[in-house]
Image 1 (cartoon, helix red, strand yellow):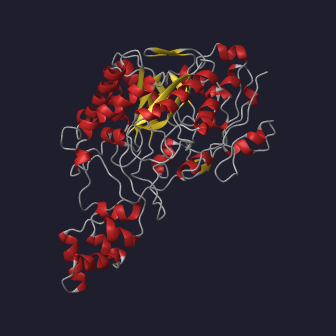
Image 2: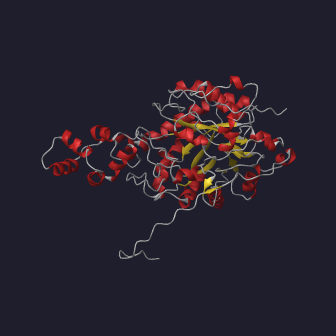
Image 3: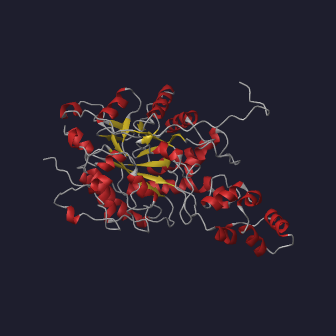
Length: 501
């Protein structure tokens, strides 16, 4: 196939697919006997540990930690409420491996976090009556700043270069001091700014400054291959000490390790460029973690089957990554999609970019407002291709799928088709933390079903405590008056109770 010549007429942009509102599909719930005989409620081995069922709650950030990253009572209540539903595995939210300020997100970068994390692991084990494995998802992330006022960007954040000085002086018709050059640039109309600033500087102006793994001119970015293995290893060791059943290395979405795996990683130090170079640090991190925790502790990974961005990694990359992870000895691989900064919507001044607002964000958390494919089981093809590649390479590493899982029928069909080994559901589990137990007991008609409108994601985007809109729909359970409320007092922080008797 030949490339079009320079004289070829420019093709018009492809039309955007029509937006279709999809209904949550009706479903048939199993009897208790059917559920017990199903694949979804059968056990699965995850390296050194066995999950009682193949039901799985993936990591969700609820914004309930203290501002110092400590476990609070609201954190314990949140995870205890999921444990009430007896999932096979419950993965605790992305938890930072560095001891640095990061707002109300859990952290594990110091021994002082251990008492709270130990209480969290104990809570899940107790509330599930020992039926749920609890894993801690651990991650690293690079610095991101809020979108600045233009005046502040030019006064404080723009690193003034000779090219800026020359452009400003030419525009002013005279030599300028550095302060005058900054003031002149700040007053320029947009067309001139697009000539004066580099694409990266324009992005910093429009979206806020954001570090990348390719910023090898920065010492701490250049040193990531040296510093990250021990940081992840220490975090995993602490998680084991705190009583978790395993850790999930967060290699997905907009964060550091995902960026190393990405085709957009063009580092020149042996940790980028080729697929082997891009896999190098993720594999070195795993080796350090395994050495720290031993073979009797589960270590899995969450990564992207498709970045869903221009120039990003696709399924051809992810199958190679999965085979490398299986060969290295990961105990499971969990597949997600998209959720990148690269195509995020422009934030308002004073806000930070949010990686789930663009097209790749929709692919990560598809809603009922979608294209013709719809949101349900939208990303299962990725886990199918990855599982096929892993098995063809001679490995039996379990593969976890997720994305728009709304019913037992859906999950059971995925397993029956061999598309995955485990089926995870985040938003449906948020809508009804008891839904696994209800289905297992043959009471699926009592499941409170997610609407897939991403009400919860909208709260996450604003860094508000994540809740479900269904929790506040005229429930009259006797504990309603004592249920904790959100900071604005308008929303329940816990799902209504359900009693099996």
